[in-house]
Length: 154
Image 1 (cartoon, rainbow, N blue to C red):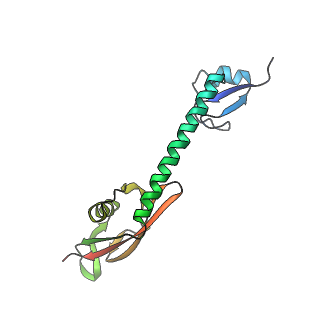
Image 2: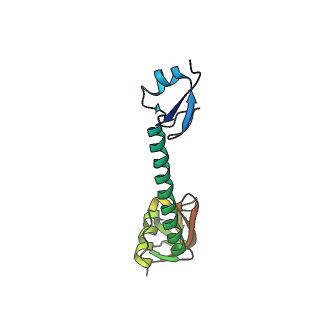
Image 3: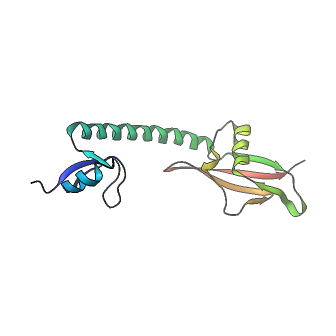
């Protein structure tokens, strides 16, 4: 009787592997736990080929997204966005500058669309008039930096 059998994981399994990996497990573990719960499928030639094909597609998609992100990073690097806000005493803003304000300013002033959730704001809220450096994480390894100038409303 076989001591191990190969299965293709359909989902991430703790202490075993990630989705799409080919792993060797005991036949009882595969037959009684992994396969009935849909966590794995038997490693037939067709299943292995399908997983390899899916991996190639995912890599191609990631490369394409990375190239688009690098192009957008070149657009964003060095830009300056000016936001006019109503100011009280000592240069303090009424409210604060949010990521949505910055994304809207980028779109209005430079016609660049950026998801507000990708903007990395300073740890402290922007509540004073001044210049701030903002970074944008466009992809896992692509980061762009630009400046935001907060000025008093005229």
